[in-house]
Image (cartoon, rainbow, N blue to C red; front, side, top):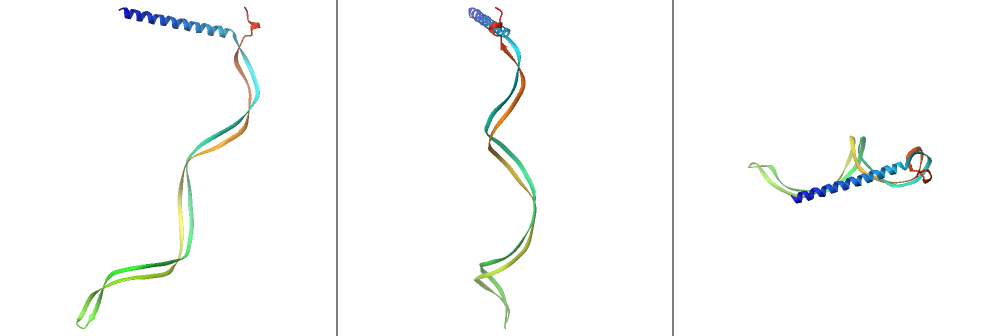
Length: 165
């Protein structure tokens, strides 16, 4: 029981200290406000400053554009290659004893050296999409003048010569 009573007394002392501290703070603020008075201060001035900053702009967009064109291909295409034959060919033969079919193996490498003339018109018509996802950085360096023409309401301390003592 004494622990609970001591705890209650301790909490009560803390509450009283907090109330006294708040009251002192509140009284100090009231006294400070009484020594201040409000005035409207006109400001009519241009402020100059230099802006020197890197600006990052994200660009994320899709560009769709149609593409339609025709291409004429007129070329002489050379062909220089070999064809390897490894086949079995059935050949009918007429013999005095009758007709027979024989299998003839063919193994040959045939060279092909020629050219082919290609003349063709190719039409292309398509919509092309271009996805852009890029961060663009650039430096902004500029002198900026900002005119300020306004009145500001502020509190100023009462000068000592105006105070009543």
